[in-house]
Image (cartoon, rainbow, N blue to C red; front, top):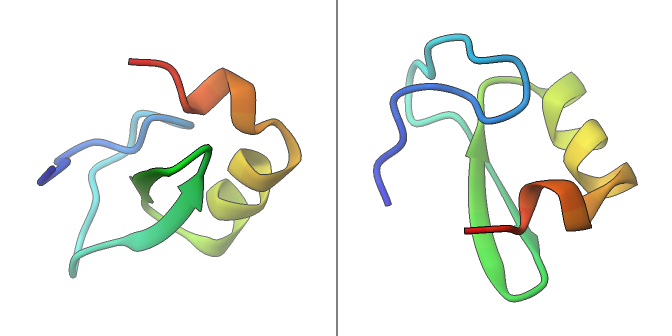
Length: 48
C-alpha cells in the first residue's frame, strides 16, 4: 500500500514514511510520534 496521508494525524507522508507492523498488517505513518501511537493502540489502526 502506498499511503499518501498518515492514518494517525492525516498529514502528508514524505520520503516513504515509517512502516509499522501491527496485527500482521504494515501501516505507513509520517513520523516516529505517529508510529508510537500505532504501537500503543494497534487495534485502532489495524482495521481495514
